[in-house]
Image 1 (cartoon, rainbow, N blue to C red):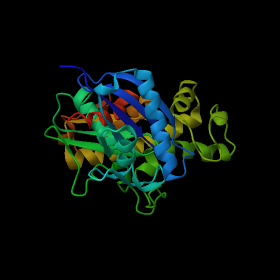
Image 2 (cartoon, rainbow, N blue to C red):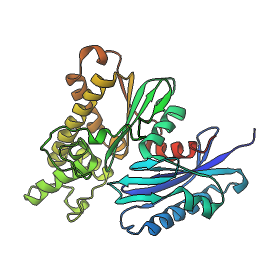
Image 3 (spheres, rainbow, N blue to C red):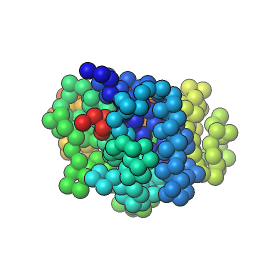
Length: 319
């Protein structure tokens, strides 16, 4: 069988990544990325996506006749049938058509899914979800999202929005989340939450090696910078990560008690870069969840790394 390829686009709150994927092997043959922030108008969003897709196609240098479609995983709630991004608090876009303009521009089919849903599809097919019929895939970055797999199939829920674990309520009168609600897990355990905690301590005048690497106005901080600060023994950053990871552990314990998965797969930029976050979250989850469902629980890291979303988005075009 001749090789078939598809373009996968991972459209997140921080960056837009695209790659050309071999649909038979899951191998990435060309990739590109650009920042999401700074894109304001809806037409700018589509132009930015097209720019990244073009770069990935140039890098892959494959015969366009072998490229069967473009799949997009977007950070937010989506209408899969109409190809519309309905609501995306971490991107700042609502009711944004994505598949129609991409199909029109490239002259090929385009499909849309939630970013964590497609990353879960990637891990199910080629990553840490292989040979496991019941698992939850949780990705931690700008926000927190999850994909649920039951009997080997992704569960989307009654309205197609299942898996919004980041908006599980921890404290009814807690911190305000980007979604507008109060006390969401995302407001306490995401990379954004880590950055905000660090920013508060820096504004109080506490010392840290990370001071020059954080955007003091926007509170933006990269996972790599957090990792480097921890390796340097920075107490402020270590404390911020431990605090947020403990809240993540509380969220994981709730998932285990409610859903009783065989495996939890953790991924995303913060998980990839900061081992301490995973260690603390896993320990806290084990401490808090019920003993019986925890007996068969496996907590593992995603195997596809930063490319899970790209590979999973491309797989939307596999059929």
